[in-house]
Length: 231
Ligand SMILES: O=C(O)COP(=O)(O)O
Ligand SMILES: [Mg+2]
Image (cartoon, rainbow, N blue to C red; front, side):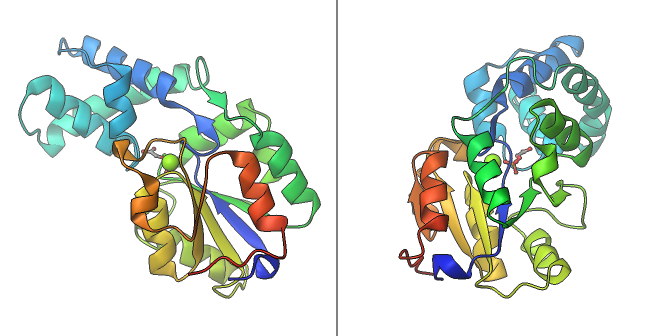
């Protein structure tokens, strides 16, 4: 993929744009406390984020109980997690360095920007608004917006169809193997970020097209027409 063919960019949210683990961990701990279960720590939550809120709740309950849990257990705990998280979406979370100015520059330069996250949609939109970046995106897809979430390619294929893009024109930027696997399955290039979550694994092992250590480097990769992103 030549950087100059990129027209649209899909950004992951948690671990890419926003360091959201502090608030996710607080909500997880409040949920476990309400259920009188063993509390977890922030480091554990960091390794449980990436496959949506229900999976995070399942992983937390499995840890706290020390045994596999049922769908009914997850269904019972979900409203507690949601209540606590919705009340404190951005108490301790922060935008990563450079996110807002880089997104503003990309939007100004005419790139179509989307958020493609596994986070439920109802948490995603208020979080983007709270950080003043919601107006920069032309589309926001949550983990529950379509029938399947990353690593399935469906959300990225949906964007390609909606915006009539070929494989060369859409780029995925994310911190997790789910982002890179979704991009590969959709046939598009990807940039993997090293500062996010990814279950404690090196993002390079998932084989993204390029790896960046900071969000500002993403801008250089995209806007430098000399750069060829190899598939
Ligand atoms: O909510 C999650 O588990 C992860 O969300 P992400 O896809 O934005 O990283
Ligand atoms: Mg992520």
